Amino acid sequence: MGRREWLLKRNCSLTPRQTVAAWAVLMLLSLAIGLVCAWQGAPYVLVFSALEMTAVTVAFVIYSRHATDFDRIVLEHGSLTVEQVRGGRSRQVRLPAPWLRVSPPVRRRDPIRLAAGAVTVEVGLYLLEGERRALAQELRRALGE
Image (cartoon, rainbow, N blue to C red; front, top):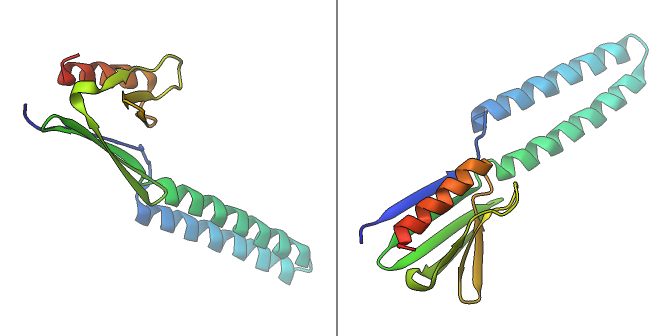
């Protein structure tokens, strides 16, 4: 049996550099409006501008932490290795292929469940429903189920 590999990752519309550029533009624009309003005699606008900049920064940090999340599935030498990265934390699980069960999603947002004995791993959260079902079938075929 040869090596088969599947890489499942988020579909991010912005690169990290573009994300930082968009954040910087928003910060500069909000600060400029706040400063102009404060200069014109409305200092409270600057306070709300600072609150807005804080909220936008928090949202961008959360987005950036998970922008590089992925699942890598490798079938090789009679075992299936699943590597998952979530928010910068990595987890790797090795499942023996002969005892592996692939459970396709039952409901619309369900992930694919890979189970061998007491160990269960959920993958495919970044795929559309049809793509998850197709991946489950492809995994079954590759495993010879």
